[in-house]
Length: 260
Image (cartoon, rainbow, N blue to C red; front, side, top):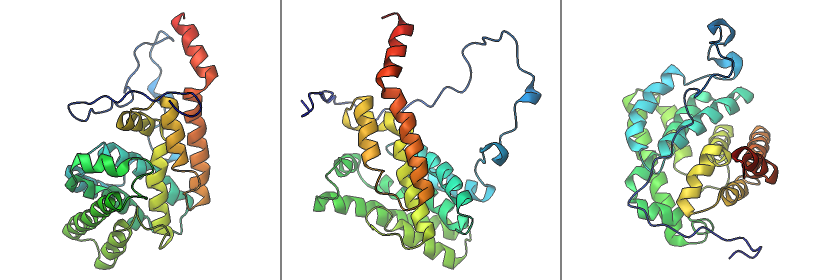
């Protein structure tokens, strides 16, 4: 039991990681009763806050993807990339050609760490306090730096930019300070993923938590750990959205709709 009287979910040993379902891609009904005129739906693009992935980043993504099929790192990376794009838009003085390839490659090194070591290292309150867990996190940074160098060199990225990106990746988790604005934006985008609804789902299953516990845990690992004011505003907004899903009022609405 928790000190506040709440209980943790009993751990369940699974046969392996289970992929989280993405949000549904299409409607299950049409209450209007007729199709909308396609002309009233704007095209996906930066004008409506949907910038997509830059063509030059698609090449990095394609080469990084085989290294991201580990503990939902592929989806985590996409969310962090989208956040990083918006952070770069809010900081036009930053070099997006450093931040965006870097965020795609930053966690590629986890692919070389056994999953049992990964989960032990990521246990809240452990990796920063345990030398063994700290060394596991360092392993993924070092491996990620090497993978990033191979990918970027193969794409003929200028050498000085490769060095800048790899230096950021090599300490993106264990280095407390930011070396540059680009480093700060990458770190912030990485951490902001934790307060997305998708991360709430993922972390629930990592540690056997309720949704409320996952929201609280993730928020605690973000607030007070960001570098830029833009990221701090994003964090407060995303956390507010996460609170709605676990609020007494929202849960009561769901019970009413279910007829309880």
